[in-house]
Length: 203
Image (cartoon, rainbow, N blue to C red; front, side, top):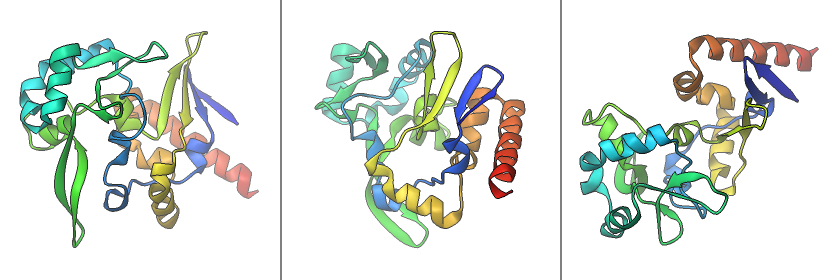
C-alpha cells in the first residue's frame, strides 16, 4: 500500500515494519558494505567539502588519497551522486572507535567521521540525509513526486530483531531525520496516517 502526504509517496511498510539499529551487533556495517557510497545532493557535497578539515584526521590514509584524487563524491554506475569509497566498498568518511553501549564496550565500531565531529560539537552539520534516513531510501519520480521505500538488507537483520523486541516502527525510529528532511507538520501527518492504518488492520 502507498500513502501520500503532500508530494511524498510513502510505502506503508515504513509505518508497519519494526527497526532499531543495534550497533553492538552490526558495528556500523552499512558504512562499509555495498558497492557504492551514500547518495548526496550538490548542497551536501558543498557541506562535505566545507567541513573536510574537521574530519580529515579521523579518515584513513587511503581514504584521504581517494578524496585528493577524485573529491568527496563521485558518480556511480547508475549516474547518481554518491560519497567516494575506498577499495570498492568503504565510504571515505568511515572511522573506527570503541563505543560503550550500555554496560558493554563494543570494539572497532564503524562511525561516520562527520557525525562524530557533529556530536563532539566541532561542526554544525551532521551528515548526508540519505545516511540519517536509512533504512528508508528516497527517490524522485518522473512526475516530480518523492517516493520513500523501506530498503531491506541482510546486514541489518539485528536491527529488525531489536526493532521487533522493542515494538519500534521504522517511522518512529527515524523521527528526527524525517523531521529534518520533511518538517514537523509533515511528520505529524505521517503519525496520523500510521494510526489510521493501525486502526484499519485491527478492526
